[in-house]
Length: 324
Ligand code: ASP
Image 1 (cartoon, rainbow, N blue to C red):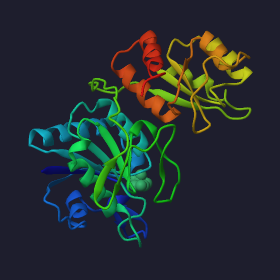
Image 2: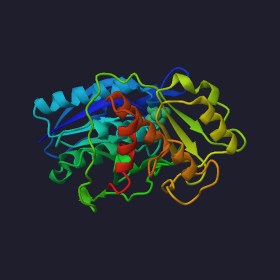
Image 3: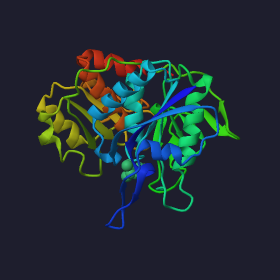
């Protein structure tokens, strides 16, 4: 059994520097060595990058996929990516839309750096290696392992800025656990939709936050974007001013409306007032369903970069309506 651990950065590899704060320092091999693995698993450790995750780019995600595929060609049976947690819900979701291999790809990280008391990096890495090497992880695509839990990227959310238990599955359950060194799945294989890896991602999709008396502030700047996510009020709503202004711009780009509430889907046919979901749909807006604004932005970016037009994007988002 061979597992490849690919380091990208994040707190899991950070140590104190001269400033007194922490920054990326440890390479993937040092992380693996810190576990003292006794299982009969051959580990190939490689550092691809050493960045804090707010600075990860779409191109870096493509590079991860390229290196991971190369590892599979070199007989790797599972991939583990170590990265920062700040953007993990987005990068793992993007990886999950593009990872077409049967070999599992596990994404993990840490909330406490290795020099802190009770740091969680080695235990998360160890659990990820167990999941990556477990036969029942095959064909499950990209998974996130953190603090004994296995998550589906689509439902993943970082819910706390410091807690070790930061990740939660919004709108969907956890799919498995790692206890007593055993990987235990409690859900069947989730059929993830896979898209082509675009040659490049040069489409700009902006997220517009809805906020009291201010959801229309940025509207004048919108024509430079290829797509929009409006993180709407409640079940996916905007103000009278917003709908008036955006209509007057006559934008011919896909605009998806999500819910800023943190959980639950957008509505489709409940409210009919100006700025509601019925009004928005009548004006060509796409409802984001269970996708939060961050995931909707990733999906819309992938679709645009794969050449999907407005109608196909509408169909694609709607195809997730009953898709689990
Ligand atoms: N700021 C760090 C990062 O996202 C936090 C972490 O690694 O969890 O890289």
